[in-house]
Length: 253
View 1 (cartoon, helix red, strand yellow):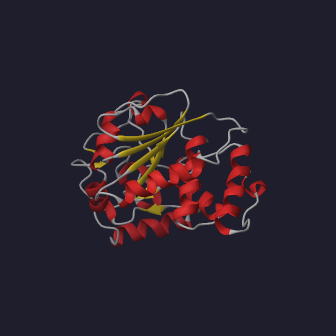
View 2: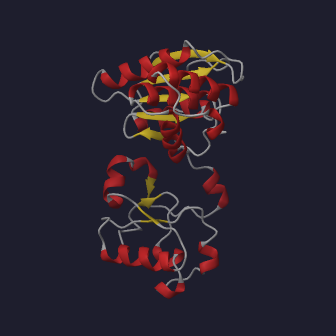
């Protein structure tokens, strides 16, 4: 295993505390099943020990995931999500900084207003541009970041005909501009208004169907949930972009 006591993912446990007794460890199979995600990693992703653990856990009915690139690669991209400390107490876990979801690697992020107001998050993710989808929350760092404030309400009747292309254009220009452009799209909770803008961008500039974009987003931000009116307008937008509807909004609801 990698040098756990030197540095590890903030919520990680050393293998001696999280694997099944058949692998020479302490936790039971029942306890392992309580975890929503079992992430395995070593310093390198091709470790024989790691592969052995993966197949053993799979044989026990688990669905483990191996960290792509291994810990070394993860640490190089996200050092702020690594620590030498063991985070065990519930109070410690609640005090951890929750980061926005990375939708496109090193480019596009989606999150909440509180995350957009946390300069540590902005700095660590190297955010350069922000799309603010709220009507009620003003921009926080206007002298440091470039903002697009759309003032949308999370209402099924909110008209998005101008907001969708405007947000897509802003995001595309930010990512195509100076090297290192990174965009955070946020609303109040990072669920509905921000999701519809992210989806609009993926449809227009990745040329993805609404269904493909929606599945991509949900895999990376499980809480994403545009309201029914927004889904209808995204379906209309899909027809505008591609000349036909590939996706019914009812499939997504």
